[in-house]
Length: 249
Image (cartoon, rainbow, N blue to C red; front, side, top):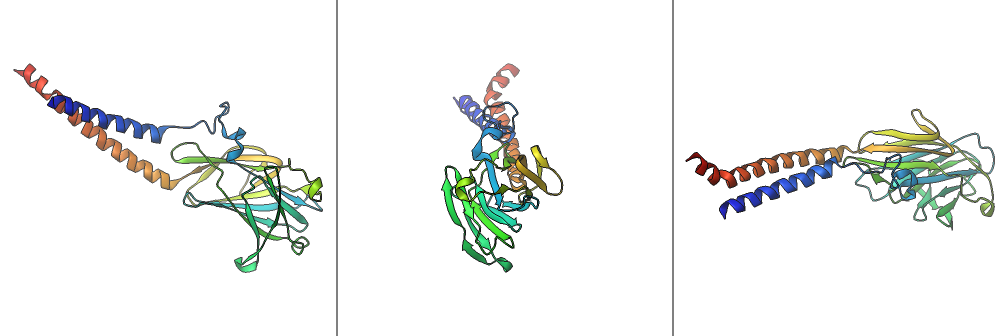
């Protein structure tokens, strides 16, 4: 009976160690090129945005992405050239406002929702000179592994403009501020890569974010796994000790 108890406890230690190992080693299909569950066909993992100008399409809009794992909301900051009349975000939960010089919050942007798109009208006083608009919205990321998440940034030319005054879609110069750790570009389409990324209309990039915080958690898991394996081995040896002693006699 005593041997059975030790063997059971040892088995529990090994089972927990195996579960933790699977947790930190498992890689999802988010970045697969063929899986039906891949990120590229999951709009819930995309930041689809558009910037519309009533005039020239030569000067790009600038977009900065700011997010950490501790944040409840993503911050998208648009620096707009003169002539921009609206921003379109494929997220009806987006809240956007004018950012005035010095960081003061200005007026909220007038919104018009059409399907999954939120049209955000630029204040009339800002149109001739350009300016900054800040948006908050829920994170749109997919876990790729224990320490890595991924998302797609898409310069979306699909929204209908006729009902909101028309215009032309601008290229978007994207910069990423990921304070959790480094990132890399996993894939790109119709984009110019450099210190920042230039997304032409209908261009997209898939970005992998590597979290230092989750890397520290993974190291603690590895330590716990080692302890569990050690305890499990000792308990299994104790379970078989009576049998070994009988053989020794």
